[in-house]
Length: 58
Image 1: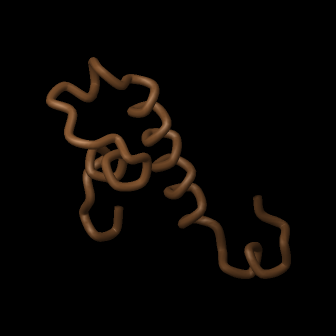
Image 2 (image 1 turned 60 degrees about the horizontal axis):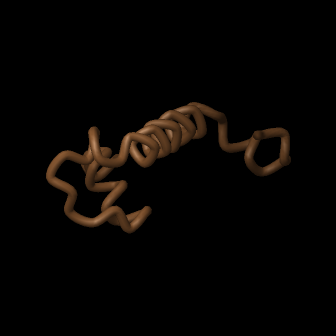
Image 3 (image 1 turned 30 degrees about the horizontal axis):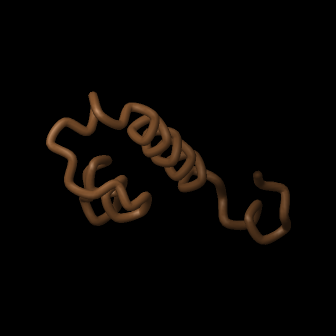
C-alpha cells in the first residue's frame, strides 16, 4: 500500500490470483479479502507503536 500497489496487484501477488481480465466479476471473494486486508493494515498503521510492544493490540 505504501509503495502504491493497487488492490488488484496485491491480490495477484499475495493470493496467487494471476492475471484475470475481470477480477471483480470472476473473483469477488478474493477482492473482498484484499479489501479487508487493506482495512486491517490501515487500522494497524494508526495504532501507537507502544501498543504493539506491550501486546495490547490487537
